[in-house]
Image 1 (cartoon, rainbow, N blue to C red):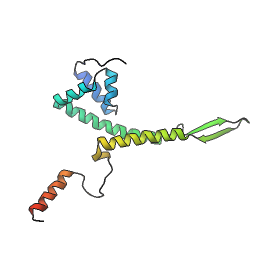
Image 2 (image 1 turned 120 degrees about the horizontal axis):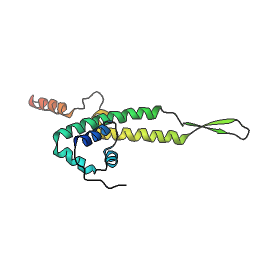
Image 3 (image 1 turned 180 degrees about the vertical axis):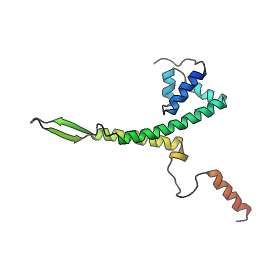
Length: 149
């Protein structure tokens, strides 16, 4: 594998990275593909607010792509059964538990990562019917304190 190069930052490279992120490709994979160090891209985010904003939007679109991919994986039943020819010439159809288990692992891994990366959108709600926005909850608590409750 070639070593990451000192990338010359230009708009075309930025757009390639952002387009890949929006498709759900990991930053590490994109950096390997374009032979740049992930730390360099992180530095760009810290130094350039506009790039950081576009990066965040691309990453959010990428989360959507990953979520959609989980549905595709779950709905894809190709390989879930195998056909083997018996000695008498008939065909036996059998379930392929390895394929089903692998698909389950792929879906669960993506869902767990999404729940960590974007918990407000993909995480499980711990409180039913309650607002997840802490700023709203904090403002309500302050209002109660100010009223003397």
